[in-house]
Image 1 (cartoon, rainbow, N blue to C red):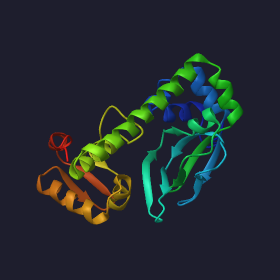
Image 2 (image 1 turned 90 degrees about the vertical axis):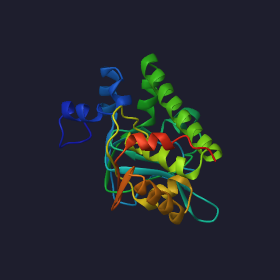
Image 3 (image 1 turned 120 degrees about the vertical axis):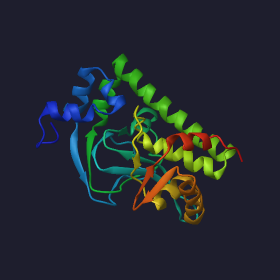
Image 4 (image 1 turned 60 degrees about the vertical axis):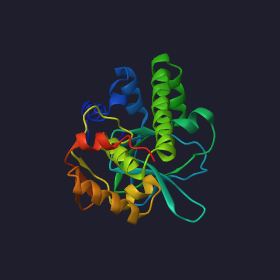
Length: 235
């Protein structure tokens, strides 16, 4: 088992808190964890870069990873921030194409690395292959939602919708939203592709409406109902 400080049952229980992983058959969960090696990343260290050859299937045991790319002008665009429990890397293993984005540790992180042969062996099973298809479908839905927001929603609605998404763990899609979103304003602006000044203006408006409270590197959702009411505002 990769994490020597943890027993197999405790590691299984810890990772199974993630909705996607927890829904896998027990045998598949055990096979994934049993084939994984533990990789520790320092803050700012990259798991992989855009253009890298396909490597493994990765499960985030602790910490946070940002999935991002650099624009032509050197500005960074963050697609998603992954929290503990999430799994990534399946796309390049399926189509055998280079990595599409950078994956970087925002804080010290522990990553479970499942080698490509072990992933391929699991894909021979119908249940695991169907689960991966479901994971891909969820990612496509999320990306379509982002494209729709950018094309049709007002800036305020985009900010609100991303906050509501982050409240459920962004990629995690937890059933229950949390009241405090652990994200800096700088990172949120990069997720939305807007300037820090524009984001600050919109957040101040949400504060005035009693919808959120701003803290250092986190945003408290004071009224989810008010955010929902603002979430469909068109341009």
